[in-house]
Amino acid sequence: MAEKKDSVTYVGLRKEILDKKFRPIYVLNGEEPFYIDKLSDLIVETALTEDERDFNLSVFYGNDADVRNVISTCKQYPAFSQYKVVVLREAQNVSKQPGHKNDLDLLAHYAENPLHSTILVICNKGGALKSKPFLDMLKEKGTGVIMNSAKVREGRDLRSLITSYATSLGCNIDAKSVTMLADYIGNDLARLFGELDKLKILLADDNAITPELIEKHIGISKDYNNFELEDALRQRNAVKAYRIIDYFEKNPKNNSVPATVATLFSFFSNVLLVRTSKDQSPAALMAITGSKSNFRIQKFKDAGQNYSTRACVNIISYLRECDVKSKGVGSRQDAYALLRELVYKILHS
Image (cartoon, rainbow, N blue to C red; front, side):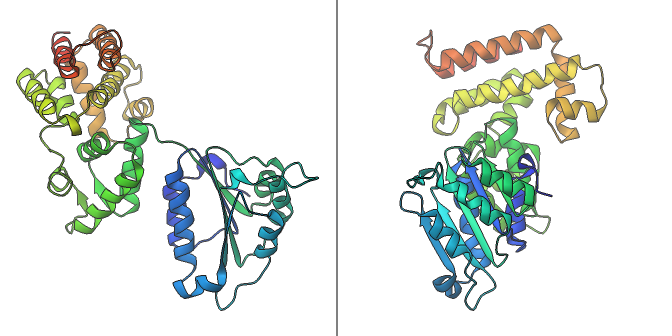
């Protein structure tokens, strides 16, 4: 049975490829080009040695590709190798030949019974591959996999991705380290994964990615970051909170106000959810907040002891207002002055 599209992730597919559990056909499509490029390159590097690529790697480009030639190449057996790899890049640019509604539809016949010594990789950037007959056949016969490469949203999705990728590398990473990386690097996936790969090499025997390791090798302060600001506000520690804001203002390149506001919005939204949830079991609270950490849930509960439901609602309103003003809408006030005012309002809610 074909794997459901939604269940296919970059991390999971990457592990399969590294384990040399290849599929006959890969459809890599979507808005995030990083995943598409990385996986297509990884398939080539893992399936073929450098010497084998001379005879067993064929690369086609959408603007110039004739789908019939792609299929013909797929039906050829490898030479002095276990696999032949055929890559169709920029499939979104495949042109229609006279008399055909969509040349990509021709791949449906190949997907029905592909050659298992061939690995066909189709890269379609900017959206979903537009060939219903081909995709339907792929799903029906289970002869390949479809991965939707969606843009990673900053916030919960990005933190979850960092945790998943670190785990796939065999690393342990705590919530503070995740937040530091998410806030500092954001969803620049090439840089983010590159930094995690670098940290993996530098790990001690416990395989733990720590704030200290991040501070030393990436340059993010372990004491002045959004995670520490959360903690200061959770504890209503005004001195610590303002000290962090002062640091942010002196280091604006690495501490943008919109990123800080987004982090605090996520935090106080979750505090509100935890405070108002009828089911206070750990499983229920993890489900509504999207957190996989009991430690993180306890943080939300602790904050809920210091901020009432009404205070949380007001704080979320203050955060929305600050976000708009910090982007220059309806205010010419300095962004860090706005952030300092926001912190004052939160502490006095």
